[in-house]
Amino acid sequence: MGLSQPAVTTHIRSLEEQLGRELFERRSRGVVPTSVADQLAAHPLGHAPNPTIRL
Image (cartoon, rainbow, N blue to C red; front, side, top):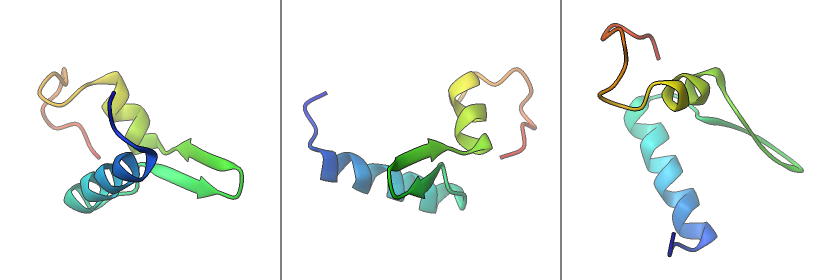
């Protein structure tokens, strides 16, 4: 991808702030995607089958 880990973290936190939701649950041994992240992964932005998808 050409991005360092700190840069990826910064981008994720920025996206979380824009959405007003956490995308990952941060744990001592890494991260786990939240249900919001699962929804976004299943329906990339602009391609949701239902435009009222709840984040």
